[in-house]
Image (cartoon, rainbow, N blue to C red; front, side, top):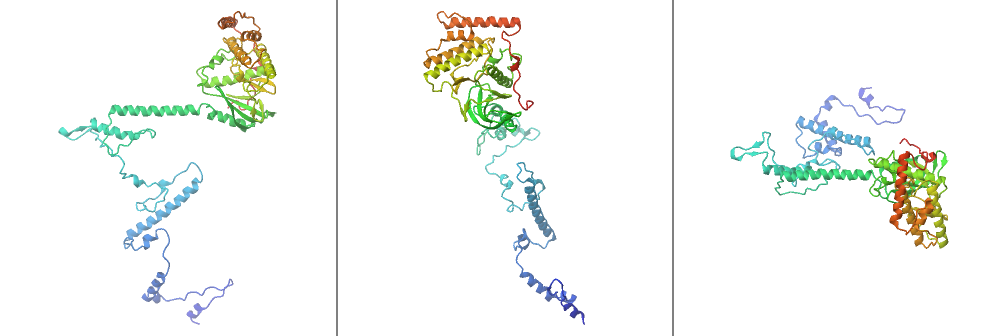
Length: 509
């Protein structure tokens, strides 16, 4: 059997039938021109190429490809384009959804021919090279400081040249400074005007930065600064509070938020509490140091130069006063936690509805009369048992809840030994007496009688002259101040039990 017959036989395969092998041909047939033409005709029937960049190789408009150098350049550009595509995919995969992205732009192979093939998200940097609306830069002076010769010499101090330079330098001002558009105008800005504009630009930038910083670090009307917001979040995270519901009251010194209580060191917190956030700005209550700098409990720690410390002392002062009042069983909020300038107290109200102020409560004659005697008794307790003067007692700082009057807002309360303590008490008596007399309580005493009843003093009323009565009060304050300074101690001793604040988790924060 000859070799041709053996090759033409079909081999049997255990995996099934296979395609017959191509017939073998001799070297002479391979070298024949007829076979070459036949193969060219078969190649012509194949579909056109669809790979990127195939148009550069197969298009009839392509440059001459007889040069090996041109072919090498075209292949290199095709390789670089594929490399850039792969680099973009790697960059997108590496960055993912991260807000901070890393660019591989420096590793890309860019070529000037890729104008039409660039992606839409890339910046067309060539558009800014020949901007018809871009102002021409002034001609620069060489390093020697002058141009020209003889009569045509121009130095770097030339008025026209400096004016044009100053106009061009205004483009370097901050974006918020509107310098206008001088297209088509030969503007010349004198040095004096340019320096004034430059100084004004710097001043405005510093002012805006100060305002932004002040806004970020101060408690606004119904908002809190980032530090206060962080403290409130920590209370929720530690379980002291379940959630914070919103603002229920605003005043000149604080903002009050309602919250749902959680637990504090395995002890239950009331179901409803309030967060009294003392404002960290002194714009609305500038004379608050009058109530604290002469208070003998805080006189050693008072620092007028640090407003944030004053705010913390103000919150601590209210906490101490509430603890004293609670011991005397005066109806007032119960202190839960003190954290810097945030005071957490029990909520006076029900189902997220705060108790009405005494001025807003709709009371009958009997309830109003009962409220008056309650206020009179609380003023006596506050002065004689708690050794305190409210210093801002009025119908705005008293709540009516469950048939009782509750006292709130005692951060400014001082001791009677305060240099102006009796004056504050006289003002409280005037507010209380005026309110109940206007509400038709016939049993309401005059301001002078109320002051004597509360203090236990016997200042003669006489013709009820305010000036004489206040003069007697000032004289008593002066004698008391001299006595305190001479003896080196307060007339009324402080209970040592209310010195330490309630436990506050994370006090080291």
